Length: 447
Image (cartoon, rainbow, N blue to C red; front, side, top):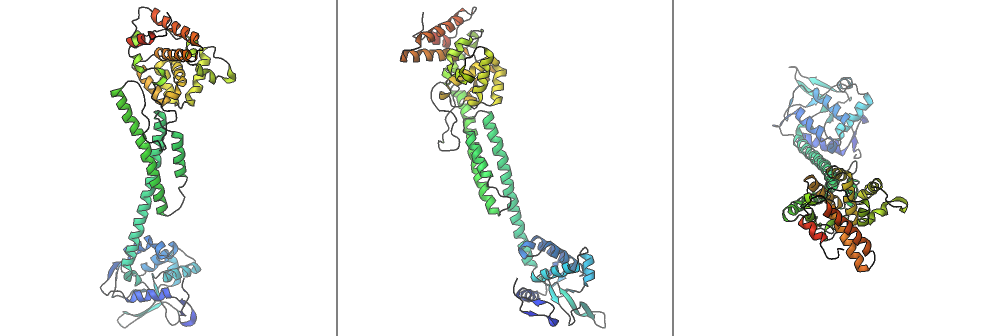
């Protein structure tokens, strides 16, 4: 607030530069100007913060305007009202006198009204012989007419800012909701990405959102969040396209590596070009020719010895119940979601699903996405095109080949492979598929 320059007669109220400026503006009212006082009042309400007015001060202004009989205010008319404090208090919802005086001073300081004081400080009007008002002392509301365009421009700017602020908040809300949904979908569908790192990046951005801040601060956060949204969206779309390409061009169930090594979507598992779980899915094309008997637990454990690492206390696995308990430990360790595991158990049966988990765990360093691969095998199981036999046979074959290279364990691996082969050959009148026969007839099999 500016320092007072002078005082009115009797030293009652100080005169400030703001008041003088308002008076100068009021005297410059075009004579042909016409405004709707309540429309202008609405603009003043919307622009009150920019004008420096308060809600209570505008309550007093509302009361003052109500004392002018006309709705339309003209630049060439007398625009002075002279209500007493008691009248103003009644129309200002019973405002205390001290509060009324304080808010009247605010209206004067903001240039919304001008005081027209009488010599004795009273508010009244002097009428002539014809009953017309010759002289009035009170509050001049001519700034409502003189500054109407200014108030309108200020109000429009405030409304535009409010709209922009609301839109950026909506952007933040929608973007946050979509990112959370896409992360959940990526985890559930086994999309190869480091979703833990994505969630950390999301939380880091969301943690920057303040309770109150200028719109520009929210705009910057919204842009950063939209960048993360675009990356997550791209990862999901790339996975969908890859799945379609794999279905058309290959049946080996592989997942393509993310093309952005420096993005937030690095694969959680090691990437490789080897056949996943050590078996080509083409080996299961003719499932009807595979044995209906269950694989012996001993052969499964010899093919998937890494499962023994998951047993508490370093003990062995003595039955299928303990084997399935170890599979329950392996599943989350490979990032396979509960829903993917449940679907596999429903489609394959609990024991077959456990063997599949064990085979994936044995070769997890060669699998791009364990969850995605399990879902692929589950889909094949639903279509009746999947069996665990080729996976276990391939793992035994790999174990035998590795044993020959290092010169230890070859005898045990060969016996297990021979046993599995006998089960396949002696299954009642089953015709062995070409793919499985090629696996059994590879060099190194004992006669």
